[in-house]
Length: 109
Image (cartoon, rainbow, N blue to C red; front, side, top):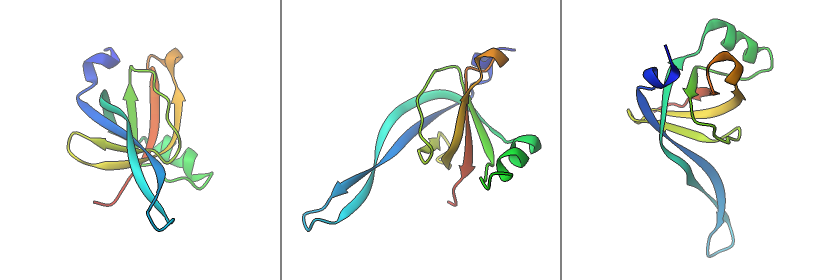
């Protein structure tokens, strides 16, 4: 089964930027870096959760996409169901038949 065939959702990926308000204070805002990204977001496997827990990172889901993308830890992912996640880490898994994986923590609604 190819990754393309299981990409059952789309996601928007945003990156936090700092804007300066009129009084000079920093005001965080989000800039879209990818929209309508074809992907699948799956609950993370136990081994993935344990691996990241060893370095004090919480991971609840894994995003897979055949599209090569550039992410940063802290980027925000919103799926088609409006669930929000924070990127904890990511990896190019081309040799495993999955082009790109992002390890996510689901944010509270």
